[in-house]
Structures are given as structure tokens and as C-alpha cells.
Length: 287
Image (cartoon, helix red, strand yellow):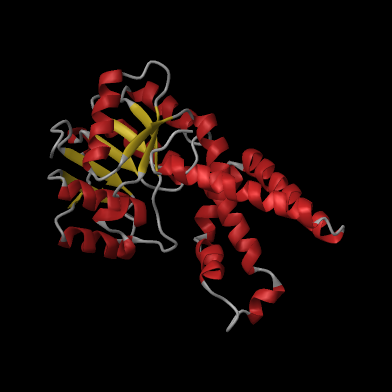
């Protein structure tokens, strides 16, 4: 492994994210252990050299990555935490942080292991081990939310570990800021995609659609169980973003209804300029 900091990696949950993490860590020359409730998934993981993560293995881990839904993460960690070494770094990979971090920090204090919140900014509209891949995180951002007093040297080791898995950057945040921004950049996009495909007009799309229709509806092909939990856990910030979007759409409708063509032009120009600015930031330009 390029960084040499962590060798034995455990992954709890071998779905799209957990399975991809396990495969990426294996390609980085780590010894990888996995645990999933689906025996067929465990067989498939074993076939590529991912070993079963038994209770006997847990104290030997350098890192334990949890890749379950928020509620399941806390429930499973209650069960596994007593078996961990106080030197095992636990990193959750949940898509929300405020619903997970307090419970994980309490377990960390109770059992003495270090804990770090995380969220890999990568994914697909598909789910499960069969769609996981080692290259899923290439160039992606890995968000980390260290708590107060978290060991800076251990944070640096974690950052190097994720960079060795293919991530292009490490973004440091805190649970509240994470959830506030994710409500826009991830969750609202899924809400809009769902609302868009639910238009009655969408039933007549055949022969009338091009790339923009597919772009707008791609993430509506979601895992409703997971996204219901994520939306619900972040409902305060997500509701604010939905209300804001509704107001902006209403502004467009008002301009059209009142015949304000110049105002419509100005609004579209402003949107184009904001998109160009955001693209520049993604390419490494200045804010």
C-alpha cells in the first residue's frame, strides 16, 4: 500500500460503496475483511480474496469502514464495538452526518476507539455488490468530519489512505456544514429528478427526448429505502432547499405569465454565468 499506514481493513456492508471500498483497498495491497448479511455477496467477495470479518478478526483491524444506512450503522456498531481494539480507526461512510456522528462518538468514548465521520462523493444509480468496482472513487472527493480534539496525525493517515484508493481530494468539514451542503448538491438533485419524471407529460417522452431528459431523470432510478432514510435524517436542510427551489421555479413561471421577456433573458444569463463559475471551480479555478 502506497501510504503504508494501514494494512488490515475491515468493511461492514458490501453494497455499492462498501464493495467498491473493499475492492479499492485490496488493489492498494491491503488485507481486506468484509461482512455482509447476504451470504451470496460474501461468497462473491471471497472469490476475489476478501476475507470474512469475524469477531476474532475485529481486534486486529487498523481501520473499520462502515457502509450501511445510518440507522443500521449505529445498531451494528453497538454489537461490534466491544470487540474492537482501541487502536482501530472507525470511519462511517453514511450520506448524512448529524444523524450518525453523535451516536458514533458516544460509542468511541465508551469503548476507546478513534472515530472519524466520512462521506465518499461517488456513486451510481445502481446498487449492490454486483455494481461495485475498485475504480468507483477515481478523482472523487472524500469528505471527512473529525470531531473536536481528533488526533491530527491520525487524520493525516486517514487522508493518505483514501488518496491511495483513488480519491482526488480530501474535503474537511463538520457534520452540520456537511448536511447543509449535501442537501443541495446531492439530495435536492434526487428530489428534482423524481418530481421531473413524475410529470404526466413524461409518459409521452418517446421520440421527444434527447440528452437533457436522460440527464434530468438518471438519478430517479434510486434506492427508495436508502434515500427515504437519508432525506428523513436531513429533513430540516432538505426542506429549506426544496422551498427555495420552488420559489425560484415560481419566479420563472411569473416571468412567462407576465410577458417579461427581458427579465427571463436576464435570469437565464445569470444561471449560465453561475454554471460557468461552478465549472471553473471544479477545474481548479478560483472562486
